[in-house]
Image (cartoon, rainbow, N blue to C red; front, side):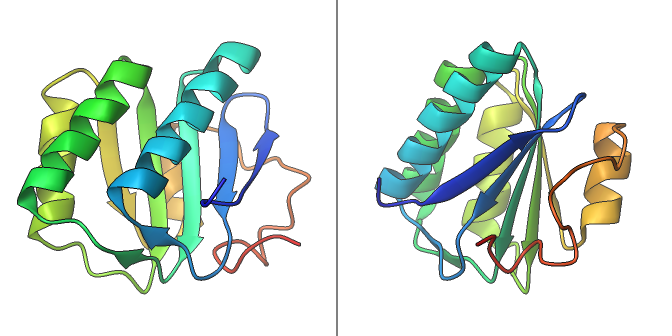
Length: 138
């Protein structure tokens, strides 16, 4: 997998961490959505928190549209909080969000975990050391 992920089921949500230096491309996004879909099925859970530090986004409008479609096809009914520190939520990112939301996926971008967890309506319990979150988990 070109998009190395670590994940943990936290009881009421699934925490997914992308390694430091994560680059968002159509291919890496598809890999993440496939993994998210599998995790949702494995844990019967529809709330996901994806965590990445300074991800580099390489999507244009068309690939943002396709990526939003891929997410919805894999995970309709999902609530997805994306904690991306040091990330500028640009037009392709907002378009991705709109495409996914129009197809049944509730998506929001955050820059800190507390806000993301609050929005998801989940507990903050986790064995993940969240002080290291958004910088990759070793």
